Image (cartoon, rainbow, N blue to C red; front, top):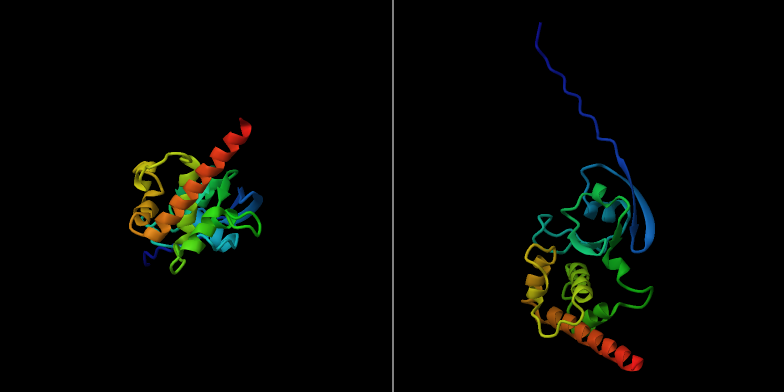
Length: 184
């Protein structure tokens, strides 16, 4: 008589996830180990968010989760149940580009374009969270533990991207100044 052990592998049951992505209610059935990045790209067919290092070091997969910048490669899909996600596809207003997208296009900030979605999402988060902090360096606007750090570190060495973000911040300040002068 032999002591043979039979191990049976069973596939984990998929989980049903409901969330809001770029303002639209969406649903996906995903394995419990799937990341938000994988769910966005594979299950929801939103391929603007890119696979980068998958270690949380590059920022290419940055998305907004309930208004906070996160790295989608380090966020499990099950964590987004009932939450609001904004990807690079949600930055534009229909056919109208977001001012950051225009700035990147005008100034050649896209380069090959692979990491551009992460840069745009990070820059939008930067501008929305710190709209009128004049003269501050980009690296100083996010805490060291922020998901933005990988992308911000690269902003600092890539002048076209950095200038595009500064240009949009400056235009945003002008718009705010104009709005306040109209109120007076």
